Image (cartoon, rainbow, N blue to C red; front, side, top):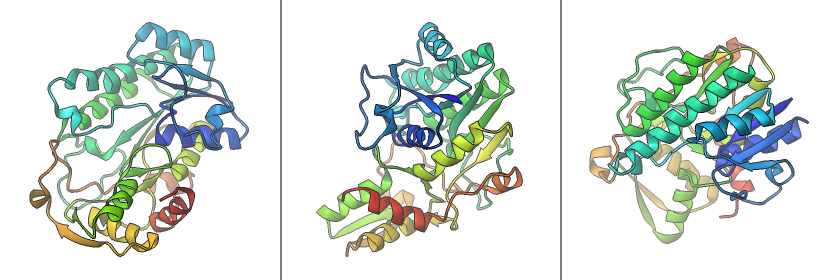
Length: 304
């Protein structure tokens, strides 16, 4: 199988390329830079073809993907800087990447009749209540620019294609790029005490585990909306921080605070990021391992 991957310099795209290689498929990696700019470990990105691609360029996107002749496109590229997305100078840039770029890819996939896997987020919902959000729930009400752009990307994919997977994740962490785990580890080195919000709930997603699921989806025809976070129960960011320091052997004191008390974010964050993953099992996919185990494996993989 030939799989075209966008955003391979990021944490998910990096892991997806490795999984494609391990499964014996042929991967073509792409990103915005002239040369691969992600981490250069044992990454399969350096072993398989790489091409520069600005997904906001409709003509080039069509040409590059068509020439690659993939069976599936796994679309990992996105504007993910949530707070920066709120700045007036960036709003149109966010839409160009997350909406128009996604639409460009979907239109090419329709033209060449290939599958598309679009990575989305819990931010498409309003974040209210305590009940987990179901994959096929259409009660959309994004709280910020980033969430609205990802929802618009979802709607573009679902309106253009029939052979698509829309996979919502939350609290992602991986080897390449920035994430909450790395932020906490760095803070733990510098400070004896850190403050972390305890009124936002969800479940982490280890990109190494997620990448396996995405390639399995590419091998199937079980299209539709899915939620895919690690198992292990719903937690707060405070709970996650405590477990990070515990597993890392840090003695950092974690003080729980409310979102209002923390008060540093430009973008409104959802309080309820609980995603229900049951549809994975229902459709024959293996759920992701528990997040505590995922964190343990991740800490062994990185240097901290």
